[in-house]
Image 1: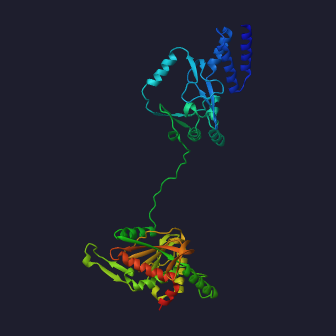
Image 2 (image 1 turned 30 degrees about the vertical axis):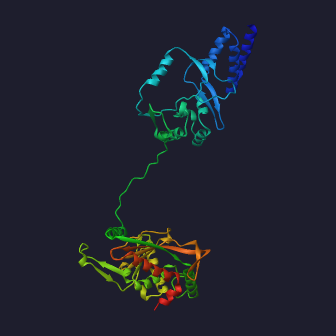
Image 3 (image 1 turned 90 degrees about the vertical axis):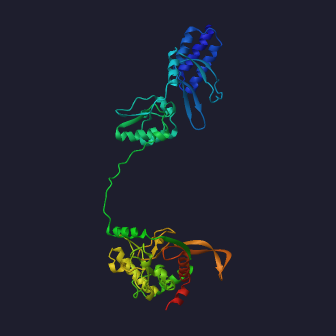
Length: 457
């Protein structure tokens, strides 16, 4: 017995000097093994062992590839049996130790917790006076990611109340703690287990106050025009234009302009004057696209008339500092491409100063809108009541296409400059076949500038 006492005493001295948790547990297991070989246990050593058993609330340290996590016990008492030896693999769901709980009160208390009815969640708002004292063990119950968030925000993790399992501090707890630091209040949910979705909180940035302003002059005109357009049934049609030959034609025109800079107020032209002139030539073959519906009483079809307009006053949508405006170029059928370019340049310069005169907004017959300068491909434009058709030009892009030779498609893939075009027409007077044929006529003129030149008078 004296030798046994000497062995136990040396073990307890070793246990007192061990600082690492896993080494301390290994020393305790060694003592437990010696005690199991002796009956009865010497009373002095037994009392020391029970003291260490009651203080041993950290039962095991679970370690995997990502983190080392402590498994704690909610019962206080004496460890009677260890179900696994040091280094064994513990199975999930199986007991680790047998604990002799002190008295029957603890068991009854647990039974009451398990059998009592669910508690309705209650939100309690309490002022935060100071950081509550925390046990240092919360450091081991927080993942490295949570500790990094604490470090980035300058938060002491011991002052954060964990809402995870067994009091684990979650990332949401840290973020909520940072947010509460500016409000001075903490919101606690009692009687309901917290979840990441319910505890997520971020600092709230106060928004600017709402304000109500009247419509601008351009917005008022657009509001009235678009409201009247709701009575028009729209028909949409889309196609693609190949602009390789058109690009060469434009380059030749710009070379001509560069050789005579005094004659023109600009150094180069865009594609728009070519599109406008080609559209005017196509309108000569399809005058209904340039018409206007006259309906004093839309409910009486016998009084409705269709006016075919001789002038090709083609409107061009412009994005100005004051908003969207649609001035028009008058009598396009009587002007050349370069003349149209001069008129377009004048309107653009006036639009930059919001100084386009009212006369340039009157008597438009058909509209072109170029959204390609901003971006986008296809659109659904809205027809105004004074016209029956409108087209939107999308962004020109370099895309692969099968090469065509003598009107026949080959297997050779080549790059082509393609521009998407979207039409909307008043379906009360223009059918789908008419707008499709008209678009094909316009497309042929745009894609073959030589044909456009041949059509000019």
